[in-house]
Length: 255
Image (cartoon, rainbow, N blue to C red; front, side):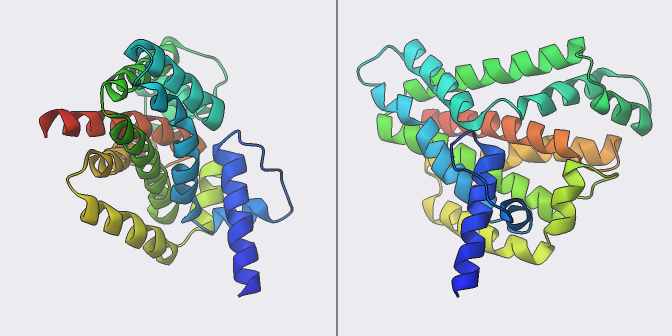
């Protein structure tokens, strides 16, 4: 029991260190524990998403554009910008002409192309506009939607780790080799059960939107790259968040 608790602590600390900029420190074994514990993904999404959503609490006293800008800044202050590099590389790979090998070369290329600039611009603009939508919702709803989107995106990443395949050595294989399909059951049971109970609350829709946003780059990578790599993990995280928040805002609008 003590060993299990320690392992979970290491896994969560490793996930926080990899997925966020929160000052959690680093200890031996954290990375390996995280890679083999996919449930740490949505747990970190819950915690980090709550911190990033704090500016939304000011929606009753500040103008919506100011709140949206605060949310945007908070997301990248808490989560960091490392995963945007995946969006940039994916953008270049999307627009290049050629086969899977050519697209993989572009993913590894450190040169920033027009596709990368456009992809990052669209992603950041999409999150800013999503924040503007959140600022128009009741405060509690806005906060839960933001958290739900983060949990959904991180659960999508956990699913990629458990069921995805990596075509070559790299960050993607670090996750796919360490996680098993059986380890997906715990986070799936928690996240999907909560989503079922909470449906059709906008936060629940945000969780589903986050998962759906992750599935798009995953599907594209399987078709055009032969599998997922670290860039696809990063891009999926960013796109899942944007899709999740927009889904939650749309759900509130239609309710």
